[in-house]
Image (cartoon, rainbow, N blue to C red):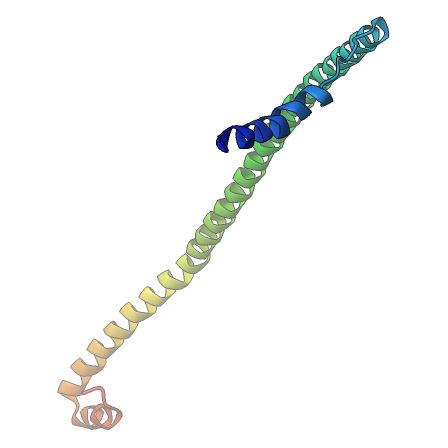
Length: 141
């Protein structure tokens, strides 16, 4: 028997306050009108957000186009710089060859002349002993 009053007390403590505190909230016409105005305001905000998103997409496309055109211009400038470097190097090599060609030719002529002079001196040294002795002292024989 002792359990029944205890159970009754628990039911009264937990269930009774929920019935006492529950109220019927009336939903008036003003509340409905206010809710409709809030929904219309949200629709307006969504439309403005969509229009801003479209404008941002257009601006993004234009910025991307400008970046692409600047990138192409940069490629052209780099290509021109590389072409100039190659041209300068080619000119330097060509100029060196043309400037050194006469000196190389003259050097070969002098070496050939020196060889002939040495041959003549050696031939003279075979016939004349005094010339041979001079050539030995100089280091040509």
